[in-house]
Amino acid sequence: MNKRILLVDDSAVMRKLVTRAIRQTGLGVDVAAEAGNGKEALGMLSSQQIDLVFCDWNMPEMNGLEFIAEARKTHKTPIVMLTTEGTAEKSQQALAAGADAYLTKPFTPEDLQQKLKLLLKI
Image (cartoon, rainbow, N blue to C red; front, side, top):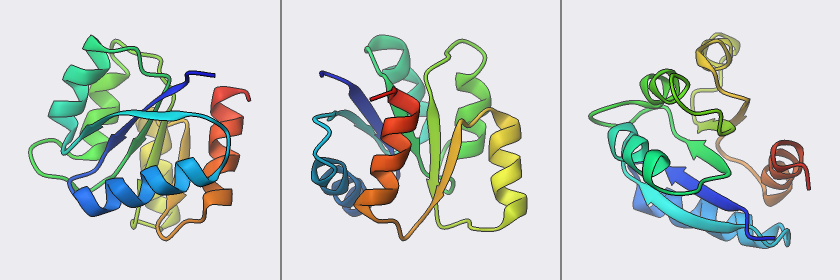
């Protein structure tokens, strides 16, 4: 399948948890890259083939909302906001900025599988 995922979260532990959950979906997608903030992620998005981004909201240097707004200026790669920010207002903000989907923490592998299937069309 060779679909490549970029994980953007300032927590290395959370990136590991998301990676494990993605593997548990059994869909055969790979976490190809990880970034600790939006600024770092923009560089990766421009220099690598990325099929989907999972992005946290609260990060240093460039938060998830800022990342989405900047990424949308030049990239059409699907982006899922994956965050503890669970209010309807935050969800609307992320979608208005250009996120393709919104998923709150905690999540299950089934939640991730649903987003992967929808956005990667698998």
